[in-house]
Length: 370
Image (cartoon, rainbow, N blue to C red; front, side, top):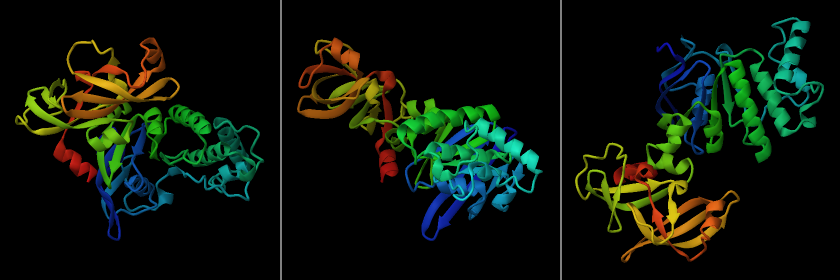
């Protein structure tokens, strides 16, 4: 057990009949860390959270919390606080009584009342303890659920899609409040979500899951800037893929008959000449300039369509090289569009900066997507 691992999952597997929900999943979380498990529906992320909580028993593998093997312990013996997507509040109890539910019998009435008032203040619900769940907004109900989860000072705070039932404006506000509360209390937190923006803005580290397996882990910046697989690249943010690339030389690839330099080859530098690869680039990294621009990694192109998105435009571009064509998207600031008077059907030069290009071998792409 590493000294820094406050939570540790070790080769955990879980099946439901023929469905393998978790396939030998291992990860750790440090004390006070905010970890987000991100992935599409059915990838195993909620099963992983339920195994940590003790709500599901793993078929194999072990779970450690604070240097204690809790693999065979019931949820009541793991000292975890859980916040569900559906709030799971008792509709016949007031907000204060919902929060006090787990405290009753563990302290005197005065101590419980003081603790509840402290938690209500902490989550921004001062003076609302008398209200019932039906009298509270969705965001307020989730704050009650959060306060109830924190009432017993848990070793771990587990959040299962805590914001998905809320509207966009409340969701943005509450995710900021949850993050600030977590940092203030220093509680180790694991949040399951399918929302990439939640994971990127709230977590210290992100675990990306797909098909019951952990496919990448790292800081939000690492996950976004250097996705390890095409699946991660396409799941988090938008990504252009160009599958027609072939190896020419070290750091040099052919796309539609044009040589392109790639600064970071991600371990593919030793591949044989002619090996097929997929090149990828984020829309915001694609540069669009006047047709007469010169330099490396350039394509002549044409703006096929423009979509206004407020602070930026999404451009659909058609790139031409002889008889071969490729289609990619670019995100350009609205101010850039206005300054250069870019418009639909306009010829342009499209630049793909070498340090922003990612490369994946074709077989890896098929394994992930197939």
